[in-house]
Length: 64
Image: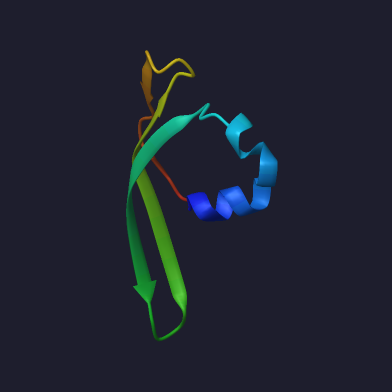
């Protein structure tokens, strides 16, 4: 992904910094006969900007 980011930001790449970190677990279910898909994200978490506090979100998310 870095080459893509570098190509799109040109000379401003060195000015970028990570300001948010997070993660999740995902299950994707697919129906190949009707081209349908359902994605479930769970165990979502984020770190505070300074990286000292982890915030975990209860439940799950159904992304569009």
